[in-house]
Amino acid sequence: MPQFNVQEASGRNIQAYGVRWMLSDYDSFPLEFGFQAYSGFGDVSRISLGFNLAYLFAELQNHDFKIGLGLSRIDLEDVDANEEEFGPHVGDVSFIGWGTEFKPYIEWEWTFSRFTSLFLKASYHVINGEKSVVTSVEATGDPIFRNRVADRDWSFFYSASGFDIGIGISIIFM
Image (tube, rainbow, N blue to C red; front, side, top):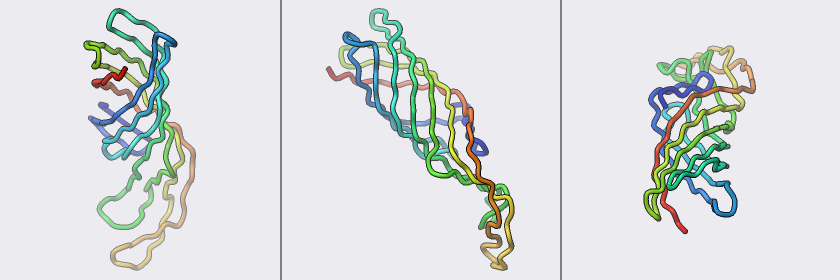
């Protein structure tokens, strides 16, 4: 991903890695269902876990074209306004629990052998969740932890987080 933003959290040139397990029988029904796990979102997130549902809308010889939706839970990293000093600061952001990730996508898959295929997937991330932002701090008198949180704003957010392009190899079990 060239740019990945979730509210105040931001990353550039993100290269997430993951695995997915997909189930399909296109001879019976043109749907594909699967589970996914991704990691490596830089300073934005630790991990994303969820499932996919895709529809096979075109099939040409060994090429499959699909549209789908990924629904995941994503563990977002908190953002410190001042990383130079210990303790809380005005503007620190804490994401509450795991966010929800909606990822519509389009995918091309080329089956080049009976047991292997190559896929190319383009998608867009929309993430929502809850967060709190430190709005005021009080001095503690401690030389290391100089401040403590006096007040926070709590809110629910939606974030249009960015496009991604993924490439991978599928191992096919029949």
